[in-house]
Length: 226
Image (cartoon, rainbow, N blue to C red):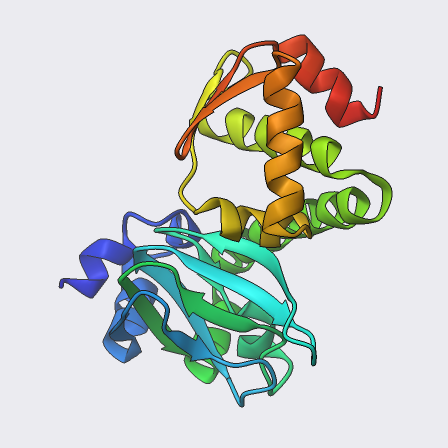
């Protein structure tokens, strides 16, 4: 794989001068991971910056009892590990490939040295961190204040808007319902009951991983808690 050419297509590196981008590419490592492989563990020593090139990765936390809470689902072009690249020594979550994935790894000191000289890279990183913070705040609100159907409605509206804008009413899930339950902080059984309740109410129709919104207004009202 031509690492430099691939980096030039990523939003993270847009506006970064060619010579700085080349310096990053020369020090970057490209690794592949199998589906289900956890390649970073919570509290593992990590001082690197990661960018997903292919596949899908989930970041999650685990309790001593084995319960999981998915924090982020990341796909091609998404970076992670930004806090460990610049500040802390251990990774704050687990990272697992949900499908065969190719990951670009840039050593933290290399990323920091370039970022100190290139404001455009720092601006891009700040923008990504701001978006992640907003998503995290939305997740916290959903988990703490909403019931399962409301959480699912909020997730679907966010996903539909991200994929195709306000007029989109069809969504193909990239994860299983079991993984979706972990994102929503629910058991698979509770999620199934929530989906069945919304289907019976004529809000949506589910066929495998395909979800079709039948009543967008009702979905919005449900997400708002009405």
